[in-house]
Amino acid sequence: MATIATVPAPGYGAALMNALRSFALLRESIVGMAGTALVLFWAILALGAPLFAPCDPNATLLAFAKPGTPIPIADACWSDTFILGTDNIGRDILSRIVWGARTVLTWAPIAAICAYAVGIVLGLAAGYYRGWIDDVLSGVSNIILAFPVLVLYILIIATFGASPLNIVFAVTFATGPLVMRIVRGLVLDLRNREYVAAAETRGETAWRIMLVEILPNARGPLIVDGCLRLGYVIITIGVLGFLGLGLPPPDPDWGGMINETRQMALAFPHMTVFPCIAISSLILGFNLMADGLREISLRD
Amino acid sequence: MLIFILKRIGQMLLIMLIVSVMLFLLLEINVESVAVKVLGQYSTQEQRELWLQRNGYYDPIYERYGRWLWGFVTGDLGESVRFKKPINDFMWDRLWNTAVLGFWAMAFIIPLALVLGILSGMREGSWLDRTISVTSIITTSIPEFASAPLLAAIFVFGLGWLPGTSSMIGGFDWKQLVLPVAVLVIYDFGYVARMTRASMAEVMTTHYIRTAVLKGLPYRSVILKHALRNALIAPFTVIMLQIPWLLSGVIVVEFFFAYKGFGALLLEASLNQDILLIEAASMVAVFVVVATQTLSDIGYTYLNPRIRFT
Image (tube, rainbow over all chains, first blue to last red; front, side, top):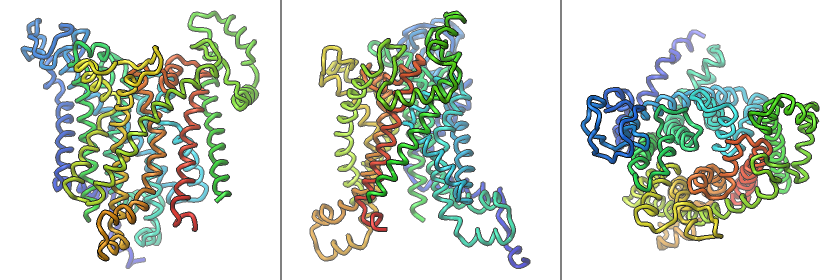
């Protein structure tokens, strides 16, 4: 006992530090740097939304203004012109895009973290305990994965109503099983390693082994998948907004903005084009980050 | 092999059965709300009770489920509240329209993705590989609901080459199919291309490829005769599993272009809480997913001898 105990068991803090270190390595990949820059750009805009948005995103100022139109009301905004124009009911598009970044960068990470928490816990349990626990969990996830994703989202949101929490719930419900599958596969491989046997001999509890010994060693693929998954969650929130099932109006949400103005795109393309570019660039950011992280993880 | 196939089909039926129970419970456990959805917000309490009584909604839930399932199995899907006619009369036409859309999307996605994937996996790290990889990351980052308005802005409003809606009111029209197919292709081809690339790159590092190169075979025949056969096994699965993805994509595309397809029908049913239609359409959607999963499993086992004989 004494000889084994001299090897210090890694703590929760060390595990977290290792995860952060993977991100620091991103600077070695050009693609990853570009992705990080895009994500940081939107994150800064979202954090400083009150500062960066020229106008109140819900104030109706001047309908159908093209980009560059002077703002008619004094002191309504800090800019002199509508930089990206206004929408059909006169709200400043730049302000709505900036505030929309805050909406999407609040709810997408929350939803993704919930999905990951559920997926990791269930995946660890399925892979570590195996047996009937694995059978039940894999069976349930197969049933959920039998739905086309968007059908599942539409069914859940149409039945329970559109609200941020229901979106988080729907994403967790639909994405959790996918994460679970990945974690389960990784755990099945890792649980036969010697350090797991060592920890078992030390008498560590099953959950401590799963969270401190196994999970940190599965972090590589999970971090890459997490970036991709975050991109998908942003798409999901956007699609729901686009289909009219998203966050309730009037607060800005990019998918909703595209839906509200697509009928007017004939005469006023700026109303739809800018939100489209906004959401695509944010998703691109996460996808590039994932690609950079994957490239680095393959290197060593 | 036969036992394996039968086992997979059995699993498939079991999943569909469980899904049907879940759907039924989700949508019909509360009979009061069923009556409200069918008769409308402004129906009186007596009307609702009378309707529920007449349609057997006060029977025990397992009896109602049994009746619904029996109707489903025998092909009687019931009547849609929204369209006021039997679901059988219009759902299959809608499904056919979506199949046409999906077929053309796949007809472009598969060759495009395979060629690009093979080209970039052939010489990993070359400038061609990097260009193709970055291009496919960019296209998969533009979701359907963003590329549809962008393409419409360019080709419908800017250049005036194509129609902006694809409702096909005046019969089938090629021009109306171009934009919906293009949107699906742009979003989907990149993923398949990247998977093909990964598979190709892996094959290129194997010993038998090195042997083939070292014994002086022309590069062309190394790729075509030796590498491709093994590199294309994994993309087969990916392509099969892309069909469920396409089913999600068509909902957005059909909604945007007003295409009279299955995805738009499912969306309309959900938004209007047309219970029997939601159940029927969801079951069809789940069938498509489970069937493609099963087919891809069977196909993969058949194509890959290493799995078949173990």
